[in-house]
Structure formats: structure tokens, C-alpha cells
Image (cartoon, rainbow, N blue to C red):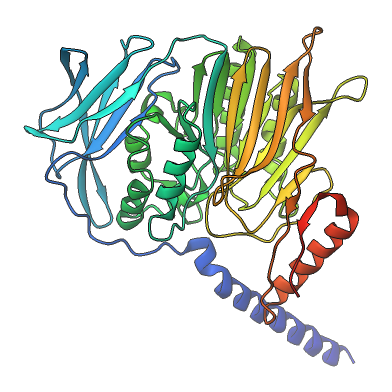
Length: 459
């Protein structure tokens, strides 16, 4: 009898081991697979020009570009009216898996407010085209910026059209923020695609981007290439250790950037940095940007990130948390004032990628959107902050809310988008079991909240 039991135990153990091996084999590429990289093509003249912020001062700017495979004397020609100055650029050679490239950064620290500048990058006597940007009066109470979540997986330059159209329809925006995964993968071919996506936008207004998981190489310990901070060069001076953190004071607001992709001990360092920055902040409005949602709409995910940062969000009165990663739209008014009135923080999840994810319909959230791309404008005016969400394809208003400061100094929230129908349009693949389950979840959600819905699933 004991011999039979031992044999059964061994067979069960063997089956479990085989199942585990099959599961690991199926997930191996997801966990550790990095795509091959095409050979780097050196640029004969300054290319991939990008305008970003510099330090935490809203009048600071960095301009980065790429040229050749070795360092040459380089500068930025900056023109204002009839005056032109040359600003020396620093260079660094980065070697990817398939080639070398020289990256340059020019730091602009003495710009005049409310002034239009023209500039071009010059390396070894070769110049880029002329570009223009506008500065504004500092510390004012009115401004607006545009936010997009994940952009990767573009198709034929579609992201570039969407970004240009969004900026044209909202000419009041002064800079653009991306919630990570701007680039599909850290390879030469995908970086080239990224610069096609942001062409004509990221040269004329500052582009602020956070790290996403697609910006990292996969592995037991994920790795972020030096190339990332060489492009988004504000990180060169602002990072803490290996943590890509940054803060910007702009008008009456302060924006805090985190790298939510890191391991526990790195996140702990970021927590300490964030608490220090929030504690000393004098800004009327506080906005946090990170890639992984603190409250996931794909199940019980990102719990370490929530444990690390959410209590600080609530303790220090962060108004708005802008997030990406989960390829759908969701919004939650997460606070309540003493009398039950809705209050900050407001959590949003958004994306601008053609790839859509199946989500859970967490009842904490006040609004969802699936099967579409979205972008948001955040506008500050005196004692109000307004967030508006738009369908990136039609540019129709999809969601809106206002944060306002009452006479007691409380930051309360008014839901302006509750009467705008939600998009639940989804056509399941009849051969895909996960699609069928998602369609069922959508129908259950529609049944619970018929007042929110515009269209339903197609069977």
C-alpha cells in the first residue's frame, strides 16, 4: 500500500513538474524575451532633435539630438529677435547592441519669460533645421498641458497624426506629458519609430516622458539603457541613484515623476524622494505621473507600487494621479470630504495605443472606456483645475471633471462627465475564450450601470 502511495505521489509530482515547465516555456518570452536590434544607422547631421524641460524651473529647457558615432564640437544656436547666441552642448557616445551613436544635450538656463525663440542644433559644422518654441510668464495661475498614456505599437505614423491633431485642436496647451511606454521596445528601429511619432510636436513644445516597462530590457533584473536619459535629458541631472525621478514647478502646480518599473529597494528610495519633495512643496496643485496604476483595472496588480506611494498621495493632498500601462480608460474620484463631498485625489488611467486590453470593472471607478485611444488636457485657472478626456480618433469629449478649492481650502471634485455615455463597444473573437469572458464581464457591467453606456458588446 505504501509503495502504491509513493508511486502516486511521484506521478503527481512529475505531472506538476511537467506542467510547471510547460508554463515557464510559454511565459519565457514574456518574462525574458528581448527583440533583436537592427544595426544603428549613423546620422550625418543633427537628427532626432527633442525639446524638454531642464531642471525644476519652468523656464529651463534642454535640447537633445543625435549625430554621428563619435563626439564632435557641438552647440545650439539660439535666436531671439535679431540676437543669436551659441550654447555649448555636451556629448556622450552610447553603444547599443548593434552600433554606436553620439548623443548631445544643450542646457538653456537663462531664458526670458513670454518670449519666442528659434533654435537649431549644430554638430561639426552641420546644422539641423530651425525650430521654434515659446516661453510663458512664470508662476501664473493659468496654463494647460496635454497628457497621453502608452503610445507604443503605432501603425504607419498614426500616433503622429493623432498628436498633431490634438495639439491643433487644443492650441492653449504649453507642454506634453507621456505616461510611459512611448517606445515599443528599446531598440534602434523602435526609437526611430518613436521620433517619427513625435515629429513636429516635440521640437516646438517641451516633451515630458516617464519610464514604462517597455522602455526596459527584460530579465531577472530589468535594465534601462543609458540611451533613455540621454534622450529625455532632464533625468541626467534629476535622477536619484538609478531612479528616473523628476519634479517640475510650472505655474501654480508641481509635477512629480516616478519610475514605477523598479524593484522594491528602488521603489523605497523613490518613496523617500517623493515624501521629501511633497513635504517641502508650496504648490497650489500637485500632480503625480507614473506608469503603473496604483489601483489596477486588470485585477490585483501593482500592489507594491500602491503600498509605496498611495499613502503619500493622500497624506500630502495630491490632486491628480496620471497613469498608463493598462491600455484602457478609467477614472476614479478617490477622496471624500467630511460631509461626503467628492474630493481629491483623482486617479486616471489612459492610453493612446492601438492595442487594447481586457479589463476588470472595479466598482471604485466612476468611468471606463475600452476599444479606443484617449488623451487628456489638464487646465489650471485660479482656484480650479479641469481635466478633460477626448477620444483620440474623433476628438470628441469623453470625460471631464473639475477640482476646485472652497473657502475652507479643501480640494473638492465635481464630476462633469457623468452624463457622457461610456464606450463599451467590443466585438469578441468567437474562438478566443478570454474574449468571451471579457464580453460577459462587459454585459454584466452594462446590466449594473445601464445609465452609463453608449453601445454594448456585439455577439
